[in-house]
Each structure stands twice: as C-alpha cells, then as structure tokens.
Image 1 (cartoon, rainbow, N blue to C red):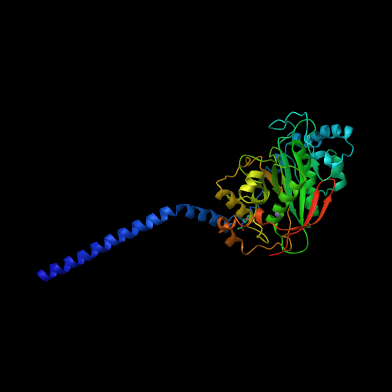
Image 2 (tube, helix red, strand yellow):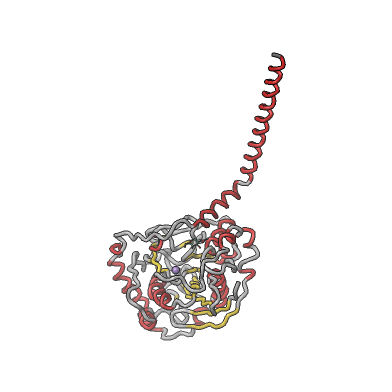
Length: 376
Ligand SMILES: *[C@@H]1O[C@H](CO)[C@@H](O)[C@H](O)[C@H]1NC(C)=O
Ligand SMILES: [Mn+2]
C-alpha cells in the first residue's frame, strides 16, 4: 500500500514538473513571437507577393465597351484643339531652351483641370503613325515637352518609360497619352529609356537612369514611371504626384479590372523627388521579369510610406497584349531578392547606379535615351 502511494506520488510529481516546464516553454515562445511580430507581418506581406497566386483574369466584364462615354470620346478629339490653336499662333518652333525658363506672370492652374472629360475609348485595332500623332498634338514641343499656355502647371512631371523594341506600343502610348497629359495641364516631358544591346532586360535600373537623365534637363519635381504598353481609360487619373507614392494602374484589363494583390505597385506609378530619394531610388540588380516592383513596394513600406491610389473606376487601364519579350525571362532570383529588400536597399539604388549613355535623340513627341546598363 505504502509503496503504491509513494509510486503514484512520484508520478504526480513528475507530471507536475512536466506541466510547469510546458508552461515556461509556452510563455517563452509567446514572448519571442511577440517581439518578432513586426518581422513576421513583414514576411507575410512578402509571402503574398512571392506566391503571386492571382493569375490574370481573362473575364472581361460585359459592360466594359459600352462604359465609354460618347461625350468623352467626342471631347477627346475636341478639347485639345483650343490649346493647339493658341499655341500655333505665336510659337511656330521654339528653341527647346525656352522650356527651361520659369513661367512668368501666370496664375497657377486649378487643382483639378477643367479640361478633363472622364472615361475614354481605348483600343488597339487601328495602327497609328507618328506623323498623324504629331499633327494632332501641335502644342507638344520638341523632345515631347509640354506645358499649359494659360496657367502655371501644378507640377513639373517627367514621364519615364523603360523600353526595348516596342515601337508599335510606344506609338499607341504617344497617341493616347499626349492628349490626356495636355488636358491634365501638366508641365511634362516624355523620356523613353531604351536599353541598348541584347542583354537581359533591367526595368528598374532603366527607371533609375530615367530619373537621373530627366533631372539633367529640367527641374522636375515629380516622376511618373510607366510601362510602354499601359494606357489609362480615364483622364481623371492624373499623372502627377501625391503626398504618398501613387500607384496609378490599379484596375488593368489584364487582371479583370482588379488589383492582383494589395501590395502591387507595378505598371504605372508616381513619386515625388523626396519620396524617390527617401527609398534610395530603385534596385539595380533585378535582371529579367518580375519582383522589382515588389522590391520598390518593400522600400516604401520600410520607410513608413503608404500607397495612394485612384478609385477603381478612374484607375481603369488597358494593356496592349503581347508575347513575353525575348531576353526578359522571369528572374529566378526575384523571390530571394524581395525577401531581403530591407537589408540591401541602402547599398543598392540611386547611390550605386552606374550606366553609360549611348545616345540621346530628340524626336517630336519624345526624348529617347539609349543606355548601356551592363549585364548581371
Ligand atoms: C507578381 O506579379 C506581378 C503582376 O504580374 C508582377 O508585377 C510582380 O513583379 C510579380 N512578383 C514576383 C515576385 O514575381
Ligand atoms: Mn506588358
């Protein structure tokens, strides 16, 4: 009997010890997780990006084509002519230095341009040619520069387009965007940053180059980074900067007019000089397709910035369908890279950018800067 109870007491003792130990373990694990909760949340965000689960939604809403406002389509042709005629009168072909001078004696343009028309018809069925676009946009000056005649623009905007062998897309971009940007009353310039050679493509590095090269030419305060194949379907989606970095291509037809995921920052975005410098610009070492936009998002988030976006309605846009480019294969290192943005961003960015300008060409509707960005 005595031996029995001694044995069960011993067992109880051991069970109690085990329970206490488990409690301690539980508490320490809880504490560790609590302390690292920020990191975990961050990793979760990256996880969402790396999965990239959402596939392009092929379903187009039925009401999409009829959404086009006929009035909008009409004034689309009509609105700019007023601007054009005035410009033709006194400035046949101004030397481009003129743009560098500060605009004097002009009132600031209103916060919201009165020239906007709203939804636009966008399609890629009829080819467009540069001569035609030039004729339709006589107020656009050499090198793809424009500023409103009757008021001082709210912002000086450089539009940076990473590019290689997409001339047809560029023509559509110029055809649709020049009238829109003029109606938005921006003081803007269009910079096509053309990657020289046939090495693997580096979108983010080209964007960095565009930032530096545009600033050499004019005192830009805002930078819009746009893929060449994305066209906004509403001119109320103003290509300017906001108090937070802006994501403009928020509802692409390619993704069923939805954001593919909350942290998505690809396609078309804008940043002020300050915002851009705060994150040390963009990464230079994403060669090939994908991830560089997620890296940029991580940079912004790690500096405590948030993303500003237009409404889904105003943020609609269309992507010109195309095959995947040669020499722009998905980058197998991208998942690993975006997992370490916070560790790498201070060393990799505008402060480590190196490239060589091969050629600068001023066309009527844009400035083309061909650069050697090297290879991995
Ligand atoms: C995920 O997909 C988006 C949309 O196509 C793309 O922009 C982004 O770079 C992709 N990210 C990764 C890590 O592949
Ligand atoms: Mn594309």
